[in-house]
Length: 265
Ligand code: HEC
Ligand code: HEC
Image (cartoon, rainbow, N blue to C red):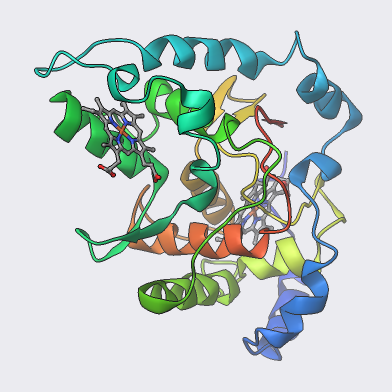
């Protein structure tokens, strides 16, 4: 097994390609028309698993989340269902709007953060860890109510500086390999990298069920994995950097419909 993700000559080639690159929004317009969900780049086996209405391994976790919706917890003696009785209609399209500007934080808030705020403030319950089964399950359950819809994000007004920072991060080289997200997920999308077909690195299936981990995995966890591969120091889950990056990625894939429950390698 090779320890390195890519070998020497490739790294040199990347340096040459990226040094000529300047961030421009104009040049992404054409590319966006050709963007595809990670589903498209997954193996037939993985796709079949996602499409299987009975065998999709994420379904069981969504059923657990459905139960969690009505589970009373915390000092207020309430569950989500106490106030959001019919998630299919109350939460329809809601997940598609996150991250969105939050007047209290004066910056974008993610769906995960919002769920924890509801627990803390409306239920008097303990917040969940970002990568916990409960929080990922409930996030996926809310995203399920936006299945098939495109994102409806706001990126102007107070959101603009955050959007710009996220976009910049996507194009910024980092780590020992001195590579940007763009390198793999834009320039080399649809090519094979150690047996993996590189996708456009979109967010439309998250939280996603990863076969390797056999659990739901957050988008920020995925970012960390990609950064570790680059030998870069990853940011933390729910850090400003990752929230901005999430905003940019979702905007980038805004014409791709939300996929839930999704399965990835
Ligand atoms: C005591 C009632 C109450 C409880 C309990 C409650 N919510 Fe809410 N929730 C509200 C109200 C009222 C709003 C709209 C106003 C606001 O943002 O506070 C809301 C808004 C939301 C939104 C944002 C909708 C949007 O348009 O962006 C989400 C998501 C949400 N709740 C999820 C949850 C989840 C998940 C739980 C359980 C963990 C929960 N809520 C528990 C009352 C409640
Ligand atoms: C060295 C190449 C490489 C770089 C650079 C890279 N990734 Fe990835 N990434 C991968 C591989 C390989 C996968 C798994 C196959 C796929 O979905 O592309 C992946 C998967 C993903 C996925 C999951 C897509 C899905 O539909 O499941 C996201 C999101 C993602 N990357 C985001 C990023 C972000 C953000 C950055 C920059 C911080 C980044 N990646 C940098 C190689 C890379």
